[in-house]
Amino acid sequence: MRASKISGVIGITLLSAALLTGCGDDGDGGSDKPFAEDSADQIAAKAVEATKGAESMRLKGDMSQSGKSVSMDLAVDQAKNCEGTIDTDGAKADVRHTDAALYLRGNEQYWKAALKNKPGADKVLAKVTDKWVKMPADDASTAGMCDKQGLVASMDENKSERKGLKKGDTTSIDGKEAIALTKKTGGETHTIYVATEGKPYILRTSVKGGDKPNEATFSDYGKPVKPEVPGKDETVDMKELAASGQ
Image 1: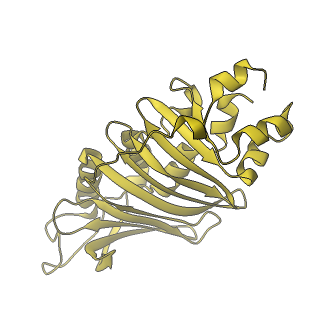
Image 2: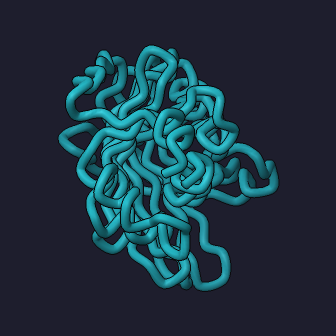
Image 3: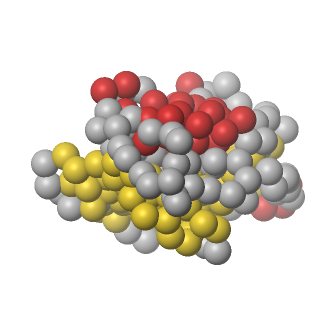
Protein backbone atom coordinates (compact mmCIF):
# COMPACT_ATOMS: atom_id res chain seq x y z
CA MET A 1 0.00 0.00 0.00
CA ARG A 2 1.24 3.51 -0.83
CA ALA A 3 2.36 5.66 2.08
CA SER A 4 0.08 8.49 0.94
CA LYS A 5 -2.98 6.25 1.34
CA ILE A 6 -1.99 5.21 4.83
CA SER A 7 -1.13 8.62 6.18
CA GLY A 8 -4.18 10.13 4.57
CA VAL A 9 -6.39 8.17 6.95
CA ILE A 10 -5.18 10.27 9.84
CA GLY A 11 -6.31 13.65 8.58
CA ILE A 12 -4.63 15.68 11.31
CA THR A 13 -4.74 18.91 9.36
CA LEU A 14 -8.50 18.65 8.88
CA LEU A 15 -8.99 17.73 12.50
CA SER A 16 -6.95 20.65 13.78
CA ALA A 17 -8.79 23.08 11.51
CA ALA A 18 -12.07 21.93 13.03
CA LEU A 19 -10.79 22.08 16.59
CA LEU A 20 -9.08 25.46 16.38
CA THR A 21 -12.12 27.70 16.10
CA GLY A 22 -11.96 31.29 14.78
CA CYS A 23 -11.53 34.29 17.05
CA GLY A 24 -13.67 37.46 17.41
CA ASP A 25 -13.28 41.16 18.12
CA ASP A 26 -16.46 42.47 19.74
CA GLY A 27 -17.08 42.36 23.46
CA ASP A 28 -17.17 44.20 26.69
CA GLY A 29 -15.75 43.77 30.16
CA GLY A 30 -15.66 45.55 33.48
CA SER A 31 -12.54 47.17 34.86
CA ASP A 32 -12.27 44.40 37.46
CA LYS A 33 -11.75 41.73 34.80
CA PRO A 34 -8.49 40.66 33.12
CA PHE A 35 -7.87 42.39 29.77
CA ALA A 36 -10.24 45.15 30.93
CA GLU A 37 -8.83 47.60 28.39
CA ASP A 38 -8.92 45.14 25.48
CA SER A 39 -11.79 44.17 23.24
CA ALA A 40 -12.45 40.49 22.53
CA ASP A 41 -10.84 41.01 19.12
CA GLN A 42 -7.68 42.39 20.69
CA ILE A 43 -7.52 39.54 23.20
CA ALA A 44 -7.96 36.98 20.44
CA ALA A 45 -5.26 38.60 18.32
CA LYS A 46 -2.84 38.55 21.24
CA ALA A 47 -3.69 34.91 21.93
CA VAL A 48 -3.04 33.84 18.34
CA GLU A 49 0.28 35.66 18.21
CA ALA A 50 1.43 34.27 21.56
CA THR A 51 0.48 30.74 20.55
CA LYS A 52 2.28 31.11 17.21
CA GLY A 53 5.39 32.30 19.01
CA ALA A 54 5.54 29.45 21.53
CA GLU A 55 8.43 27.06 20.95
CA SER A 56 6.17 24.07 21.54
CA MET A 57 2.73 23.02 22.72
CA ARG A 58 0.51 20.01 23.29
CA LEU A 59 -2.88 19.73 21.57
CA LYS A 60 -5.45 17.33 22.97
CA GLY A 61 -8.89 17.23 21.42
CA ASP A 62 -12.06 15.30 20.67
CA MET A 63 -14.57 15.75 17.89
CA SER A 64 -17.27 14.05 15.87
CA GLN A 65 -16.53 13.74 12.17
CA SER A 66 -18.69 11.93 9.59
CA GLY A 67 -20.45 10.06 12.36
CA LYS A 68 -17.19 8.88 13.90
CA SER A 69 -15.53 9.83 17.18
CA VAL A 70 -12.06 11.24 16.62
CA SER A 71 -9.54 12.10 19.33
CA MET A 72 -5.93 13.22 19.27
CA ASP A 73 -3.17 14.00 21.73
CA LEU A 74 -0.15 15.55 20.02
CA ALA A 75 2.90 17.45 21.29
CA VAL A 76 4.67 19.48 18.60
CA ASP A 77 7.40 22.13 18.36
CA GLN A 78 8.69 24.74 15.92
CA ALA A 79 11.21 22.28 14.46
CA LYS A 80 8.35 19.88 13.54
CA ASN A 81 9.29 17.33 16.14
CA CYS A 82 6.10 15.71 17.35
CA GLU A 83 4.78 12.79 19.33
CA GLY A 84 1.28 11.64 20.11
CA THR A 85 -1.74 9.49 19.37
CA ILE A 86 -4.75 9.60 17.04
CA ASP A 87 -7.81 7.42 17.65
CA THR A 88 -10.85 7.06 15.38
CA ASP A 89 -13.48 4.78 16.92
CA GLY A 90 -10.78 2.46 18.24
CA ALA A 91 -8.58 2.59 15.14
CA LYS A 92 -5.56 3.91 16.99
CA ALA A 93 -2.16 5.08 15.75
CA ASP A 94 0.87 6.43 17.61
CA VAL A 95 2.85 9.09 15.74
CA ARG A 96 6.44 10.30 16.03
CA HIS A 97 8.25 12.78 13.81
CA THR A 98 11.98 13.26 14.33
CA ASP A 99 15.13 13.57 12.22
CA ALA A 100 13.03 14.41 9.12
CA ALA A 101 11.16 11.09 9.25
CA LEU A 102 7.62 10.21 10.29
CA TYR A 103 6.97 6.98 12.22
CA LEU A 104 3.46 5.60 12.65
CA ARG A 105 2.41 2.60 14.75
CA GLY A 106 -1.16 1.49 14.19
CA ASN A 107 -3.16 -1.24 15.85
CA GLU A 108 -4.87 -4.00 13.84
CA GLN A 109 -8.13 -2.07 13.56
CA TYR A 110 -6.31 0.94 12.18
CA TRP A 111 -4.46 -1.03 9.52
CA LYS A 112 -7.53 -3.03 8.52
CA ALA A 113 -9.27 0.25 7.75
CA ALA A 114 -6.22 1.70 5.99
CA LEU A 115 -5.61 -1.43 3.89
CA LYS A 116 -9.24 -2.20 3.05
CA ASN A 117 -9.66 -3.43 -0.54
CA LYS A 118 -5.93 -3.13 -1.23
CA PRO A 119 -4.08 -5.93 -3.08
CA GLY A 120 -2.08 -8.13 -0.71
CA ALA A 121 -3.65 -6.48 2.33
CA ASP A 122 -3.45 -9.64 4.45
CA LYS A 123 0.30 -9.98 3.93
CA VAL A 124 0.93 -6.31 4.60
CA LEU A 125 -1.30 -6.34 7.70
CA ALA A 126 0.88 -8.97 9.32
CA LYS A 127 4.02 -6.92 8.62
CA VAL A 128 2.81 -3.54 9.88
CA THR A 129 0.39 -4.15 12.77
CA ASP A 130 1.88 -2.86 16.04
CA LYS A 131 5.13 -1.99 14.23
CA TRP A 132 6.56 1.46 13.72
CA VAL A 133 6.14 2.18 10.00
CA LYS A 134 8.65 4.70 8.68
CA MET A 135 7.01 7.05 6.17
CA PRO A 136 8.86 9.03 3.48
CA ALA A 137 9.79 12.46 4.79
CA ASP A 138 8.88 14.09 1.46
CA ASP A 139 5.44 12.49 1.15
CA ALA A 140 3.00 15.29 0.28
CA SER A 141 0.19 13.76 2.32
CA THR A 142 2.19 13.98 5.53
CA ALA A 143 3.14 17.62 5.03
CA GLY A 144 1.72 19.68 7.87
CA MET A 145 1.05 16.67 10.06
CA CYS A 146 3.59 17.85 12.63
CA ASP A 147 3.70 21.50 11.58
CA LYS A 148 2.99 23.58 14.68
CA GLN A 149 2.70 26.81 12.75
CA GLY A 150 0.29 25.21 10.31
CA LEU A 151 -1.90 23.96 13.13
CA VAL A 152 -2.07 27.41 14.69
CA ALA A 153 -2.53 29.21 11.36
CA SER A 154 -5.59 27.11 10.57
CA MET A 155 -7.58 29.01 13.18
CA ASP A 156 -7.11 32.32 11.41
CA GLU A 157 -7.85 31.38 7.80
CA ASN A 158 -11.31 32.91 7.74
CA LYS A 159 -11.09 36.51 8.97
CA SER A 160 -14.88 36.81 9.12
CA GLU A 161 -14.89 34.32 11.97
CA ARG A 162 -12.99 36.87 14.04
CA LYS A 163 -16.05 39.09 14.35
CA GLY A 164 -18.64 39.06 17.10
CA LEU A 165 -17.05 37.30 20.08
CA LYS A 166 -18.04 38.51 23.54
CA LYS A 167 -16.01 38.59 26.71
CA GLY A 168 -17.18 36.10 29.31
CA ASP A 169 -16.20 35.21 32.84
CA THR A 170 -12.82 33.95 33.99
CA THR A 171 -12.46 30.27 34.80
CA SER A 172 -9.76 27.68 35.44
CA ILE A 173 -8.33 25.46 32.68
CA ASP A 174 -6.05 22.77 34.10
CA GLY A 175 -5.20 25.01 37.03
CA LYS A 176 -4.56 28.14 34.93
CA GLU A 177 -6.84 31.16 34.97
CA ALA A 178 -8.44 31.96 31.61
CA ILE A 179 -10.98 34.38 30.18
CA ALA A 180 -13.73 32.98 27.97
CA LEU A 181 -14.58 34.56 24.62
CA THR A 182 -17.84 33.30 23.13
CA LYS A 183 -19.84 33.52 19.94
CA LYS A 184 -23.16 31.96 18.98
CA THR A 185 -23.75 31.00 15.37
CA GLY A 186 -26.99 29.24 14.58
CA GLY A 187 -27.27 26.37 17.02
CA GLU A 188 -23.56 26.40 17.86
CA THR A 189 -21.71 28.11 20.68
CA HIS A 190 -18.00 28.73 20.00
CA THR A 191 -15.72 29.48 22.94
CA ILE A 192 -12.02 30.25 23.17
CA TYR A 193 -10.26 30.40 26.54
CA VAL A 194 -7.21 32.66 26.83
CA ALA A 195 -4.68 32.63 29.67
CA THR A 196 -4.90 35.74 31.86
CA GLU A 197 -1.54 35.25 33.56
CA GLY A 198 1.81 35.20 31.80
CA LYS A 199 1.64 35.07 28.03
CA PRO A 200 -1.93 35.05 26.66
CA TYR A 201 -1.78 31.54 25.24
CA ILE A 202 -4.88 29.76 24.00
CA LEU A 203 -5.75 27.16 26.64
CA ARG A 204 -8.92 25.66 25.18
CA THR A 205 -11.39 25.97 22.31
CA SER A 206 -14.80 24.36 22.07
CA VAL A 207 -17.87 24.13 19.88
CA LYS A 208 -21.09 23.02 21.56
CA GLY A 209 -24.33 22.26 19.77
CA GLY A 210 -24.73 21.63 16.07
CA ASP A 211 -23.67 18.41 14.35
CA LYS A 212 -19.90 18.81 14.80
CA PRO A 213 -19.21 19.41 18.49
CA ASN A 214 -15.54 19.47 19.45
CA GLU A 215 -13.15 20.51 22.16
CA ALA A 216 -9.38 21.04 22.18
CA THR A 217 -7.07 21.78 25.10
CA PHE A 218 -3.64 23.38 24.67
CA SER A 219 -0.91 22.89 27.26
CA ASP A 220 2.81 22.25 27.87
CA TYR A 221 3.82 25.50 26.19
CA GLY A 222 7.61 25.64 25.88
CA LYS A 223 8.10 22.05 27.02
CA PRO A 224 10.76 20.24 24.89
CA VAL A 225 9.43 17.67 22.42
CA LYS A 226 11.98 14.87 22.07
CA PRO A 227 10.47 11.80 20.40
CA GLU A 228 12.74 8.77 20.26
CA VAL A 229 13.59 7.08 16.97
CA PRO A 230 12.09 3.55 17.17
CA GLY A 231 14.53 0.65 17.20
CA LYS A 232 15.26 -1.13 13.93
CA ASP A 233 13.83 -4.39 15.25
CA GLU A 234 10.43 -2.73 15.69
CA THR A 235 10.43 -0.62 12.52
CA VAL A 236 9.16 -1.33 8.99
CA ASP A 237 10.36 1.00 6.22
CA MET A 238 7.49 1.84 3.88
CA LYS A 239 9.81 2.42 0.91
CA GLU A 240 11.41 -0.98 1.38
CA LEU A 241 8.01 -2.62 1.81
CA ALA A 242 6.76 -1.01 -1.40
CA ALA A 243 9.91 -2.02 -3.27
CA SER A 244 9.38 -5.64 -2.24
CA GLY A 245 5.97 -5.61 -3.90
CA GLN A 246 4.03 -5.88 -0.65
